[in-house]
Image (cartoon, rainbow, N blue to C red; front, side, top):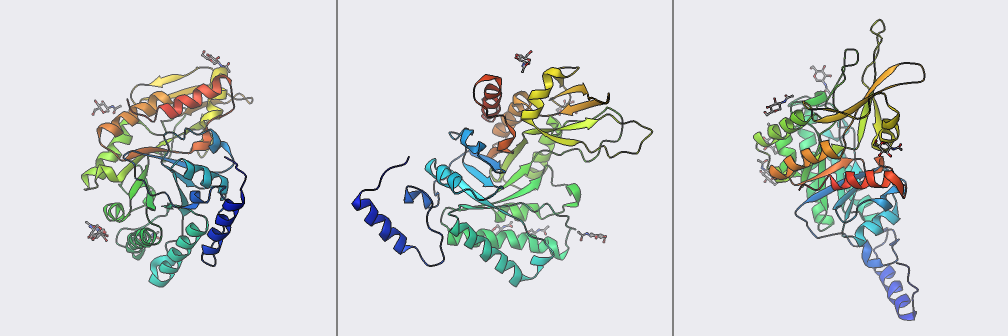
Length: 352
Ligand SMILES: *[C@@H]1O[C@H](CO)[C@@H](O)[C@H](O)[C@H]1NC(C)=O
Ligand SMILES: *[C@@H]1O[C@H](CO)[C@@H](O)[C@H](O)[C@H]1NC(C)=O
Ligand SMILES: *[C@@H]1O[C@H](CO)[C@@H](O)[C@H](O)[C@H]1NC(C)=O
Ligand SMILES: *[C@@H]1O[C@H](CO)[C@@H](O)[C@H](O)[C@H]1NC(C)=O
Ligand SMILES: *[C@@H]1O[C@H](CO)[C@@H](O)[C@H](O)[C@H]1NC(C)=O
């Protein structure tokens, strides 16, 4: 992509820099046009959370439409994404207690818009996973926050996108009682986090899937039944699983499980006791292994088989798209099995 600048190009570059309003960062891309916001709309969203470092270079860019940059700001990622017509959006989070005050709320929004412009970003993904009581001041402030953020971004950055992350079901999961239909209407779409569907696992080795098929689908049905247009819903799938230690029942233990990225799961599965097993009820794979201290573990995860079933449902239901937490969970090292496994995970997002 690197090109040397001739005299004419240098002049154009200087003029372009002079035209930037004061206070704006200068464009970090070789091609200055890449600092323009992305304005194309595509029918099917593929929404990728990126948590940092450089593995984004190995993503399947032919599918991606939006990258939510949850790691440190990476200008190289922004330039590259724009060269592929892909939006890059900020992460938005703020303590809800603070934004009940409309002035504070507006100031926060202005700050986000300003940051997005300085970094040549294309919107914001609001990731507020805070407890809210129904009809509390926070409840109304949150809906207002999304309405005002969307309005401000759309006005300041043409073609920009404002999205909001919601739990797998609208039934006050983890005490998040939000005005879901109001937020859906106020934003471009909701990213439904169809994972972490087990709050607690109480007994010995009877763990459950991170995102069981039926439970996942029931969540979408509930959102749709409350009047939310399927085109306002993007299905989020997990590229990680949970490792549950089998409990010694004589001990009181927190059995919430530990998150493991797909790349680590793929490294461990061949040395497991069980190999890959499939739970037909939950339509999810799992395996069992014994650790160096002799304790048994059960690992539940999602793989191309479980993900493609959910992707097919999403297509049939007419959802806006699909996405994952998070793009960096795969092993992108070249050659070998890892590369094929990662490719299969990307392919699984495409419904047949
Ligand atoms: C929700 O309401 C309950 C009962 O009134 C209260 O104890 C709790 O602190 C409230 N939670 C939040 C996040 O406001
Ligand atoms: C949807 O949003 C629009 C624009 O913000 C608003 O005028 C309308 O009242 C909203 N409808 C509902 C049902 O919330
Ligand atoms: C949700 O928000 C919308 C838009 O602000 C509003 O019209 C509606 O009454 C709210 N619904 C509930 C149940 O609070
Ligand atoms: C793991 O097992 C699969 C299927 O039995 C095999 O194809 C693959 O080569 C094995 N991978 C490693 C790293 O041993
Ligand atoms: C999942 O849903 C289908 C269709 O409603 C039902 O036939 C099946 O028994 C359910 N499976 C489980 C494990 O709940």
